Length: 498
Image: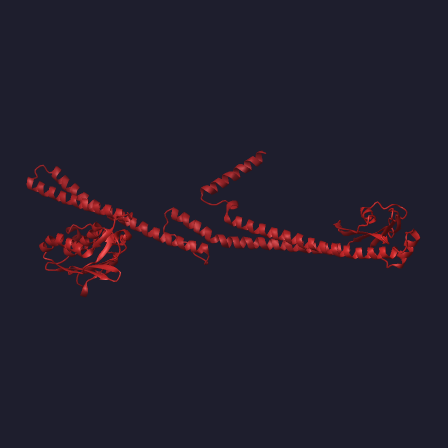
């Protein structure tokens, strides 16, 4: 008992360690379940194969033997029923005239059950009474047929009455003991068992191979999930086949692609945000330390330092506000939308930027098509237009020009902002909408940019079912940004659009 208890504890400890390692115990694995399922099906089929044919064969043999013996018994009864009584001498003479029935015992009785004739050479019972159920039933006028397979032999019993002019004179009882057909049946049974063993072995091997093939993708997928859970987002699962598991593996690979992209964006965003926040904080700390550590600093210098601190604080405020805006856009909040005329909104933005444009000697030119309405929020579209037009003014050249075009293009409304400024290098265009990305970092900081305006504009446009594209201006001069938004049908009501 102690050894058994010790062995059980060791096995339990091993299974516990396996579970902690994240592996499925062997007897709980899908592969074992597949194998057991296949084997159960095969065993059920083998059982049917070993029982149904044998039962059918037995029934066929029983029916054939009962029919044959009954026909013989009726023939004997007709031959004996030629007089009003049956005597031992008469029955013996009549039986000698009939064909010898090899292998079949013939028993003839009178109306009282007294045996008049018995063909058995081993157990002759002439002169005794036949206490046999079949004989008793035959003396009552019934035809009786009974068969059974026992101890490797077919045993068939038939009893019929011998009738003369409606009177039962006696009974004819036939008993057949057949081992030859029993041997044939046993041979069939032996062959079926051999075939069953072969089928079970083949089924076991096939089930192992098939279950391994079926669970291969599952094991790979499970290993991939564990790798991704540990932070290895670059892990991919090898896809084989075209079944559901292969499609699941493909979906998993696409999911890990997205997770890897999101993780890279998150890390870059955290790094860029930390860098952007660290720069003004370091400037504020440096300026404050300069004031505190210099007792002889004059008031003019103090005011200058404090002014610089205020500018850096304003920059921190802008960055914080932009980060909050991006966070809200990432959460896809539900907003109350309504019809917005893009042309009228551009005019408002231009009015606000007019002093800035005049200060840097930039001309604002508008090409506004009327009734260009979209379903959006006024504040969101105002922010998109303001970011694009403000950038076009800030990064322009003295004496430059900003053209703003609003027009309908099929089911879309397009807002195009084109400038004659410094432009965007071709290699920077794919990343121009990335968060904290700047083409010219020094010029962006001087202009008060945070590197988040274009990201906010793109996310806002996409939130409303549109998008923003950027390209270099005609002949490589300046830059051009195009916003596309779904056009609001003039016949639709606000409630229907919401």
